[in-house]
Image (tube, rainbow, N blue to C red; front, side, top):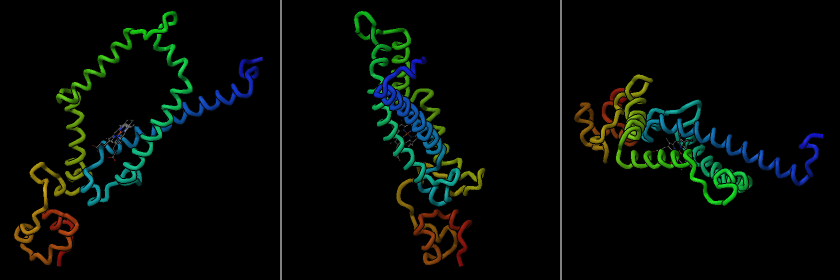
Length: 200
Ligand code: HEM
């Protein structure tokens, strides 16, 4: 008779629960990872709204909601998973005889790598700088560079931040304030207004 057939009913129920939480953690992580990647390559909120950005039919807000909801579920399922597997987890980390934390080479190395990555992020060392630069590129330039059908006017430099100076626009475009106001109300900048909106 196999071990599975020999096990009692409560044992089978607990095994099922453990299995189910393992799958839930894994699937929640997949959704978290995919939504995290989508948020990583997404343009800034303003550009996303203006160009109607979306990825496989979902806009930035939906990706953000998925990410936050599954972050909470991932943590929740993760805690249940850890509680249900506490014994094997503890024996994985502790010495069998003394029951004290066993500082293996792998544990020490993992801690060192994480510590170095924390320092790299705080002090802007590689690879943190490259990751930040890649994210800024997607935020500000990629979707608005025209390479993927965006509008170059959405390329945003730091100097563009702050309140939009509406009064300068009509002069730049050779139009009156009344012409420009509907577009201005949507926060569009001059080049975008002139190229995208039919102004009478
Ligand atoms: C699986 C790998 C993950 C990737 C690739 C990822 C990526 C990202 C990215 C790119 C953002 C946007 C950051 C920004 O707007 O500046 C983000 C936001 C966020 N992430 Fe993750 N993330 C991951 C896992 C997690 C986990 C494990 C948690 C929490 C348990 C988490 C919680 C959040 C929260 C709360 C936000 C803010 C969302 C918002 O402002 O709408 N993420 N993540």
